[in-house]
Image 1: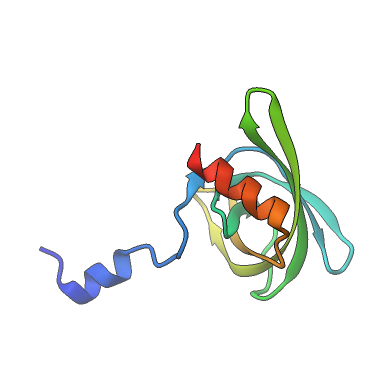
Image 2: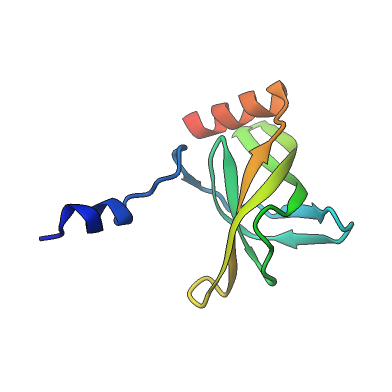
Length: 118
């Protein structure tokens, strides 16, 4: 039996429900460096990526990726993000990095909500 304090640490504290996501994401860092990274999950509030390098918490980036909203409806998403975590994961083969979406346009927000409802 798990005590209540341990159980609380095992609960996912993120505010948004996550969904597996496997479309490549283009990242442009504030330094101007550009890279492509595989994601592992997405929500209407952020995205998890596997990077070859560690990012500092608070790092800003522009994220671009395709979002499939139906058989004939592929939407290009461009959104700003802030790094909320980045840690080495041997299992993932790189740095598991989380970005919170910021300053999200209403078009992007609606597309993300629609994708999450699929």
